[in-house]
Length: 410
Image (tube, rainbow, N blue to C red):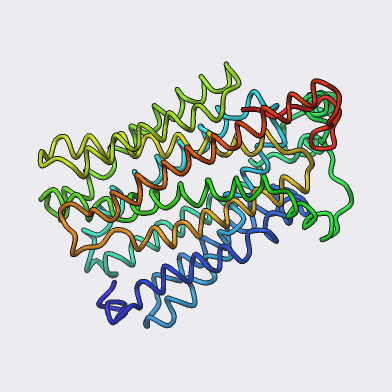
């Protein structure tokens, strides 16, 4: 693909990745608002079908300029998926139930990511069978995505208060029970009438920027691993191209285990910050194994620890922010904001794996370790703030999140 579309000239390939992320960041807030405005069934179905059609079209581009144009459209269509799903899940479950659900969502994502790499490896062997290998990848993935988008219209559920309108899901009575659960937990089941002022007023809350910082620092690492793990395996550990693609999948399958286990512990004991810190320490150990030893087996095991830790932390961080905010439009704003900073972290993370530094990639190692030390520091500050605020709430001198009886989750 790189040579066919002349993406290997100058920094064209980097621009194609960069422009996708910028387009996605720019449209995340409007797209997340659209989830609430049009409803999850309609909006998720629409953007999924759009993403699939654009992916199909990508198989038939002739120039690098056409590729970049479609990458912009892909970024726009994908912008609402992650923040929208994060927001939707947070409206359905009480605070003590959330991390396990986020872990399931994250596990599904990494399983698809891992399996997709293996499938793409197989599709690439079809090179010359009417289409080139990279074209087959886009055709198959695009067709599957369109099919999923069509199914989504009937399969996706609505918000709790409207869930009786979903196909064969809840009765009006059951929908009322679902809404009462959320109102009892935090009292924000229904949103106010939409205005931009009611959305952007939440930009004044410094907690939002703390959550954004966590996501930015986290995605410095996840981007470098997800995009460059095959390169690290090939150039850094000496595996062949095919073996590198295949060996990059097992760490993601493994990541489901710590993601699920840590979420069960987090929900049972209502712990969020300590879970994040534990995962950070595990990731640091993994990167030390990856960067400071010559044994290939030890380095490869390090990729398991690092991958499992950051995947588990996605669920923990999503729960951490969702547990400590109240209000539908605040959830919309925060979900979009943290996902935007997540994308910004991805842009920065794409530059830390430097090919001339093979086989050690020490810039990536040190940035990853440093970013997670900083995450531990941010969690420490949050914990101190939440403790003091909760103490004042118990004494009756402060109402948190404008909600009587609400307390922050550590």
